[in-house]
Image 1 (tube, helix red, strand yellow):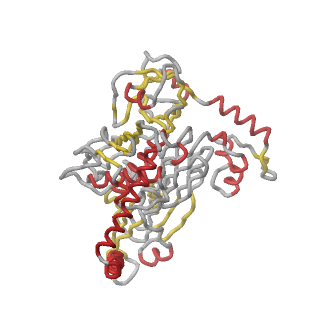
Image 2 (cartoon, rainbow, N blue to C red):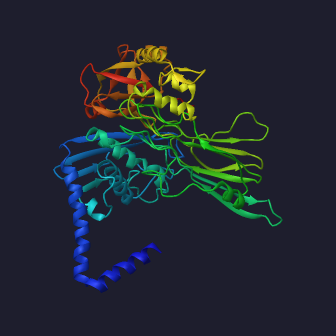
Image 3 (tube, rainbow, N blue to C red):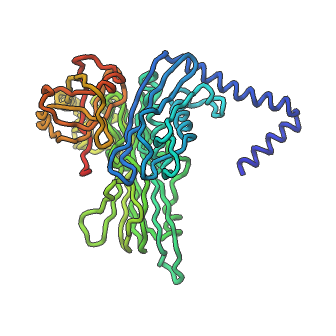
Length: 486
């Protein structure tokens, strides 16, 4: 219908002004967009930027899947190179090369020119490399279908530009497609019939340098669908909703907080099968410039008579899980990453978040360092200053050491630390992240103990050392990521 309307308008222009005049003006629309994009690129320093991010897994193997982004600026042209991205996967976490071009454009456009027009002229100054046989340029017979989840590539591309335009980017977001399919036989009526209930709840958006991330929205990489009315869904399908609310403490803490995810919980009066394709259930959305990660997504099934929920073994990817009449399904979507140091957040903003149930009292005290007089819910400035000094002194900084060639294990980059890190609750094989002053995005890694590494030091391989632009002896802010059994 949209194409027919557009076609009728174009034909109307041709009938009114003639083909040559109309086409010359349409050409100028594209040329104008190209000039605009070239001008914006030319304002950037002729430099390179790098970022890498991880997917939880492909739904078949447990290994993390890595996406690498290198951006080169040369004059008024920009090259987005995805070399180093993992090979195509056994599970459906693959796309064709056209989507690699799409993700590159989305990331560049979001960082450099959000309000500008979108047409093919904007693409002309942007070159894209996606090696064949990788997740972003898969070949038959690789299964495809994870466009919404691999769309994190667009976010990683935007975040990579944080080195060049830190004021224009946001942190990673939790608003993937979150595909959920519940299929079965609707037994509510005299004439039972098959049904497929498809849902796709949103997550939180990333924080920016001057603003909190929007809560529970469809953003850059998550599609253009709206959340469904619960009353309509309950009428059409055998589901009964118990909860639909913003998810407290899901927005990544920072000077500016990441957007909140949501909790959707429903019970089904019919048997069925549940299939899920999502991400961020193991690797939470990252923050920027010391901001914390957003809460990871969770998918839980509560069986009748069982006290503990069932969680899919690979987190957010499962096919055909049996659902029994009376089971309750809870979907908790991821929050967006925070931007900047959480201890620098204005206390009155933390108070507002607490009053509105966006942040818990515990998180306000233990993460933001804000203490309240709970009798009248006002900020205790003296106690807050003391608490923030305590938390700053608890920050872990490790001295960077330059290692040799990159080492990948379990799909993640390896960093080596002294076993004495166990005193901070670290276990061999944990996931962690580190921030460099020269590189706003965090680098994430799998930690391996090594007795040869001095205490309070971390060995980074030479590849990571280069893109983090580290200096010998530099201190990195270090944090342990949430731990999972796999």
